[in-house]
Image (cartoon, rainbow, N blue to C red; front, side, top):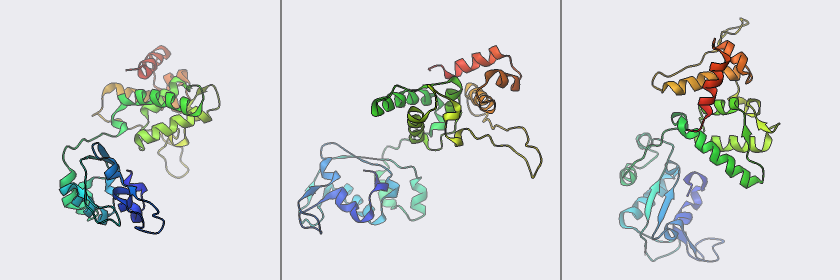
Length: 261
C-alpha cells in the first residue's frame, strides 16, 4: 500500500476491508490488504503519511494480530509480516506530533537506511541499463543508446528524485530524443543548467563546482569531467582545453568513467 495515495476516508476499508452494506456502495464483502496478505508480507510504503487516527488502528492490529472489517463484528486473525518504508525521518515526525511514538517503537524492528542515489554512484549505471531495457519492452522501441557525454552527465548528476527520477529520465530519452543517440541536449533542462556566480551586470564568474573531500577520487573526477563536457556541449577537445589536459587524457578518463563496473 502507498499510504500517501489513499484518501483518509478510505484508509480503514483499504487496509482492513469491509462487509456488505457497511457504507453506500458496499454491495459485497471486500477483503482488505491485511487479510489478503495472510501468510505473506504486507508492505506499507510512505508510512509517515498515514493519518494519525489510522495509526492507532494499525497499532492495535500489530499488538494482537486481529482486526475487524469495516461494518463487521467478528475479529479475524491473520499471520502476516509487516515491512514499512518512508522518506520522512520518523523520529522528527514523532517529535512534531504527526506520528505516534508507540507505533514508531512497535514497527522500528530492523531498520535499513538506504542512501540516496547521489551517494551510490556505482548503482547508477546498472539501474540505467535496467531501465533502458524496461522502457524498450514497455513502449515497443529499440533500447536507447547514449553518448559518452550523456552517460557522464547522468553519473555526475545529484538525483534529488532518486531512482524514480532516473527512471523518468530514461523514459524521456527513450521516447523524446532528437537523434539516434541520446545527447546532453536531450536531457531535462535542470540537468543541463550551469550556474554562474555574478552580481548585477558584471560578467559571470568562472563556473564553480563543489567537490566533497569525503567522496572517492574517481567519483570527483567523473563530476569534473561531466561539468566540463556540459559547459562545452559535449565537445571533448574544448573540454580538455578547459581542464588543461590533453585530448587523449580526456578520452581516457571519459572511457573509464562510463565503463561498466
